Structures are given as C-alpha cells and as structure tokens.
Image (cartoon, rainbow, N blue to C red):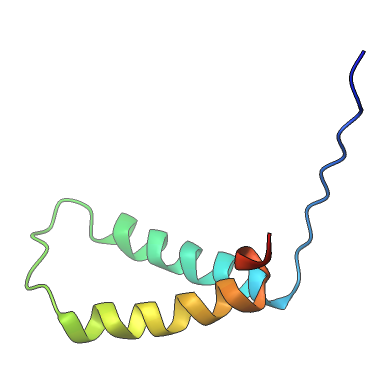
Amino acid sequence: MGEEVSVEMVLGWPQGIYLALTAVGLGVTIAKHGEPKGNYSVGTALVSLAITLPLLWWGGFFSH
C-alpha cells in the first residue's frame, strides 16, 4: 500500500525557549483578559520579532 511515515519531534533549547515564551505570553493574556489593550508599539513588535526569528532559525524551522 503506502510507505510508513515517521515523524519525530525534537525539543531542544530553541524549542524549549520558544514554548516557554509562548506560555508566558499566554499567561499574561489570561491575567489581563477583559482589560483594554492599550497602545500598540512598533518597538515592542520589533523586539518580539528579533527574539522569535533567531529562535525559529536556530531550531531548524527554515531548514526543511
């Protein structure tokens, strides 16, 4: 019939850091649920991007 496909999930440092940061972000969102969001900041978005992209690169997200 078909080939058996094996999918292996690897959790190294980059993946762990990303999951931890995501969990913290979710926790903050849960804690502030229902409150007005406030002002948007380009600086905050750039810092977030500067942290996330290297983690994804390091973790091999772009290598497939």
